[in-house]
Image 1 (tube, rainbow, N blue to C red):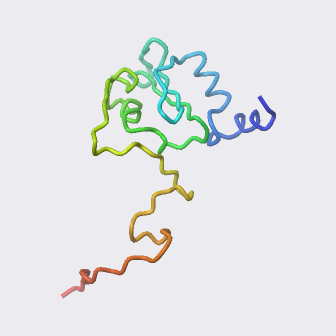
Image 2: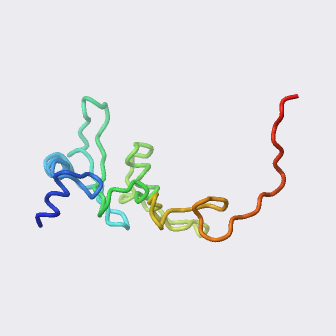
Length: 137
């Protein structure tokens, strides 16, 4: 590990997992799967229930910068205990109308800027003229 990477892992959490997170993961975690972005998902070894939480711990080690929008919907549901079966053990087929997941890191050029956003490039759409300000009567 380079000195720069060592200090980034020691003092920052947004550039990837910290040294303590990596150590905790090695000791207490088991790999559940990996997504198309290279993020690796873990749970408590053997599915052990955490006595402080009352359920098993689940976490992700991001491939690169820690950005929650880079978690695909299936894995997001598993991380938040919405579903019990991780996507790696499911045989899910995308529908024809579904688009592949893409992260939307805020504050970057890759962020989604909908129509009408002041940060969107180009000419802004004109107001529709269907708005009437409320005035008390």
